[in-house]
Image 1 (cartoon, rainbow, N blue to C red):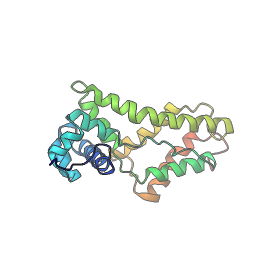
Image 2: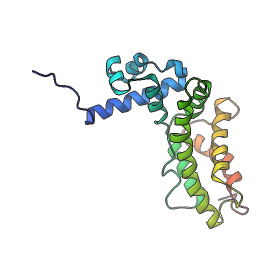
Image 3: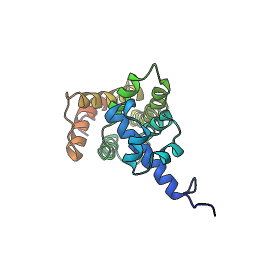
Length: 200
């Protein structure tokens, strides 16, 4: 009689798949690419190493799955409200996520010569989607006159990453929750706002 297993694509399979990817993300952020081992990631996800290999046959696939867990900002800046309100809403959503983008990017840069696919994954699955979300926000804000005419999605993305880099290096304490939202808003909004909208 054949043994019952977890059906590929089923709800339990998908839950394990996502748990492994999330554990890989945290391992990559905490311990770099060397820390993304099937035994460590599977243990963190609460499954066997063998199960980890079934879901992600290679270390590279496991690390890329982790990278794909980083938020893309999709929908964070969209919707009703002024640009200032939408930025605060996006920052509030972001405050619910741990700050992992800087250590993950650092780990991928460290491996750029051996595993260039890692940086491509960061670019394609994290940075470019974030820039696209910001592009919609910037275009709408420039049309409404709320955002600086010279503002681009790329400059907003550079500001975003720069703030997290400053936080990761101890130059800017973000805090948590509402404090984090207020600090990020007070740093970013004056650089984004069109003249006359700085106090929105």
